[in-house]
Image (cartoon, rainbow over all chains, first blue to last red):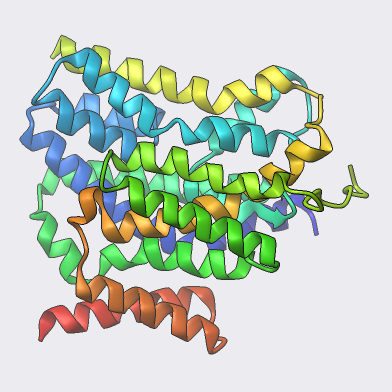
Length: 227
Length: 101
């Protein structure tokens, strides 16, 4: 399959998340407008950072606390990208700078769509999955800034189901071994417990410890013949 | 407004660095086999954790019956071999229907 076909496949698979991303973008734009951020800052933020969790976090905490604490909180929420970048690296090609640039396409749904199993990723599919989500996020932000809808209206149409349902179906598809099932359940349990004690971003980072199951004897994946 | 712009730029820059650090530092070097065994499980682990975080929210305050049932409908549809997008749409419709009642 050509890179173009895999890019198109990634875009097709990300259609659901892109629709949900648009709705979230509308919420972010509306909230930023209400917080007095003006039009340019939210649009630039959505275009360049392209990160719902960090953007919502900054928007919320900047209104109530110090800028330094708000920035630190938003950054820590995205610390999982550090782990995801390491996981992606073996599937990237080219020099360090080119690899770092390609990794900018990382967002949760794209990372999952691009996973081919065994820790290997399809980079063309990653790019294809991120492109419509980025456009939807930006367009959603603009819509929210212009229309300022009530967020409850969006949930009334079941928009809040799209992301968790999409992630659930992908995890059902991913879990093909006892080891993967144990790791997934471990990650879910860690996140569930830590949600009672800390912010969702930190719970997500800590949940990646569930992958340490792979370090147990017999956990090494077979060598990729294409590598 | 300066405070907002500086914060926006700081988070944006940090976000770029978080995504770029692993590939930039590792470059062509492959992870050791044992590390790859761990990294290969990051996707399913993060997926399951994201499901929990999306459904429960901070301090489990976002638990919502219609959302849970909607996700359950999507999972059931997918197990019955419905395509991914159709399953997700059925889940969203189920939640919307429950909220309309």
